[in-house]
Amino acid sequence: MTRRHIAVVGAGYWGRHLVRNFAELGALHTVCDHDSQRLAALTRMRDVRLEMDYRRVLENTAITGIVLATPVHAHYQMAKAALAAGKDVFVEKPLALTVEQGTELVTMSEETRCVLLVGHVLEYHPALKALHRMISGGELGRIHYIYSNRLSLGKIRTRENVLWSFAPHDIAAIMRLLDDETPVHVAAHGGSYLDSHIADVTLTALGFAGDIRAHVFVSWLHPFKEQRLVVVGDRRMAEFADTDPDRKLKVYEHQVTWVEHVPQPAEGEARPVPFEADEPLRLECMDFLRCIEERSTPISSGRRALNVLKVLEACQESLDKGGLKVPLPREARDFFTHETAIVEEPTDIGAGTKIWHFTHIMPDVHVGRRCVLGQNVFVARNVRIGNNVKIENNVSVFEGVTLEDDVFCGPSCVFTNVINPRSHVPRQHEYRPTLIRKGASLGANCVILCGHTVGRFAFVGAGAIVTHDVPDHALVVGNPARRIGWVCACGVHLANSGDRLSCPQCHAAYMRLAPDAIVPTGDRR
Image 1: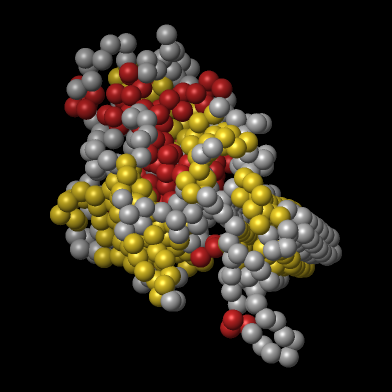
Image 2 (image 1 turned 90 degrees about the vertical axis):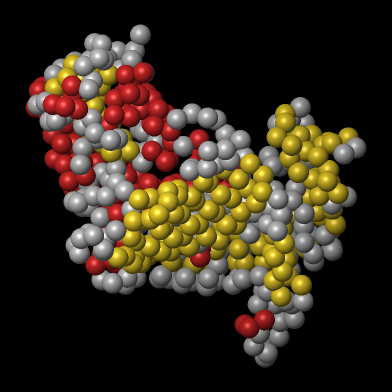
């Protein structure tokens, strides 16, 4: 039987749901609320103490975890008192009302080794987790933009505005989908109609590195309820509609092709995406109990919530300044640069990246997390490099080249950005884009001519000259490069059996769609 050691403080609208979940999980010890009528409604609950004095909850040694479902303005003081008493804390969003307060709470939790979970419940939604897997797996392609609407009539606050009340869920979800990226800048516009000091409607634009844009529209003065998040990629689009009772998560097979330099949209089918039908709040409560038991870090941790709080504070600054664009301050550098390397500002370089001897990075470059740039690498202006990219020695990545996540560039591989270079003829306006898709490997001394795409998990052999697009998973060699087989996502040559292919190492299965196209089936053989 689960040990009863959790106190829920606040039995109002949202607190009742927390009380129900912790009671069903067998962990509820105490419910605390200053409203005697709310407590009276809970007298039917067996083996649960009812308390009106928060101090007695803090003093009770049988209570190890405190869940705060109190008004936002009380979060900081009550969470601080709980951490000071050595209690693990689950506090509803937002963590606090200022970054200074939030930083203090996170520091206290780390110094006391107490669990600090912040109630960004959308991060626990199985549909959002499935959407994140689709994005990470490259199913939507390169992400262009995300928008989120959280609209309803009601839940009107008198102490905090709609930005602080509604938007934390969506900001946290968008940052999670982008692998915890923090916006480079924000701009927020709003309107105050019921109270001149409290915004009832806000529209916030978020600008991320790599030209990804997002916006969050929130309102509690809306004629109908809508909770919708849309992700637009260059391969597919996805919709997460939490208010849709039947098909909450869908993928749209829409495509945009270029015909004689004119974009032509082509609508595709919308197909539902299955996911586990678990209640997000229950999963969040279970995560809190697990972290208490294992002394581990929650999914919606204090650190991640602090990053959301920093975004909220910047949004509020923009709102106060009439929608002025507000940059978010860059944190202390958490990547390594060798003393001989040159990194020109402004650049955006992710955590855990290593930049080695004599490498030169020009301004306006984005380099993702956990990348390695070897000796004598040159990265030109406006280049976009994803996460976990490895660039070996003596490689120049010129303007117009994009490397998606998990790309490997072998020693001395070559990129171009014009097809007919002349020293005496300027052709900067003729740069042609080159795209190396997620997981592709480029062998030593190969050449990728501009204007082409190397597909996902493709493998370009050493010394090959790529003069045309390379399909996903294709193995190409020679001059000009030609396909001689297929490779698995793990890099092993696939065994061919008619229209079915399989990996002899990891046993992943693939299906042939056309002479020059295969797709993973998701099976293991």
